[in-house]
Image 1: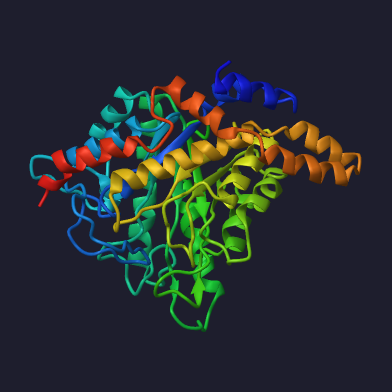
Image 2 (image 1 turned 90 degrees about the vertical axis):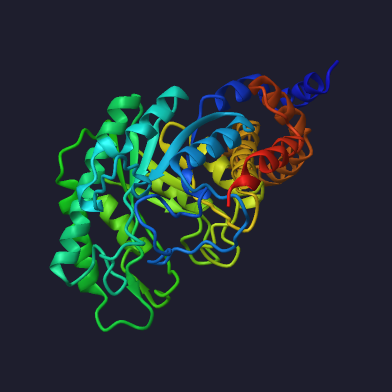
Length: 416
């Protein structure tokens, strides 16, 4: 008997079909963020990161061109099991033959190479307007700006991104999640908290007035607790983003688990939102002290978020995407650890006897619930993980890192 067969029998005693769990996980898409590969630099500007975005570290070998970024993503995704989706920011537009277009004038043609890349790999594409690192971020403000020219510029950018998102969905045949996030806010206590939010509300409504097919384009609003330079006030707070999504049927709420106060956990928020929203979106990261976007690892909150998605029978209702980046370590390894960690979390959730545990809770058998929750933790989960990776044609242990080191020597080290 193999280790997997033995583990399978142990899980079966608790009512878990590990073969079914493996097959289900193979088809659950995870959107992989392109910006890990070049520290959120993009290709439409040469200036520094501004607007509440920061990537720390200067590990050698970051991608400098679209071709290098695609090559690096290919390498990382080849080392990971599961179904992937491509997640782009608008600043990754690709211009050719000397052409340039400002963000309010972006068109689908500026993303044709990304569509080709995705279609060749049977992936859908998610999209994010880029409301940072641009001269039209005036006094740290975009969609909330009291300067009408500034606000309108960014509204037009959002509308352009709606059109591009529709193009992605039509080309790939997969719905495109388009996420609106801004870093607008104030460093110190503001004199007016409401008017910036009213301008933000008006701006999003104007963006969503751009025609689109809601079956193909899934606009979201992402909240923020605070950021660099906006420590005292952010216009797009959790209450604002959630209230907007709740009152605008064309819009979904998006939760980033780094965008809340340290004592809040998104795992508890997922089932709460699913009581009211047909669909929600999730950005998966690891906040060490704040929204630091550390590389996702296989830790308690990561597992709990995955458990809630599975427990709520919401795999088809939650759009999952990575949003972590680290410039201080090998970027291919960072991607790989993050992707594999979420895959482990989802497999762990799928291998949990959720129905049986729920029955104990509903019957007030709390002692039995506690005992069995602890007993399940002792089951040989990593034997199931090894089998899953083997069926997906990737290594289950850290031997994948040998490929990363070889890639660093052969490819990354030659980038100056």
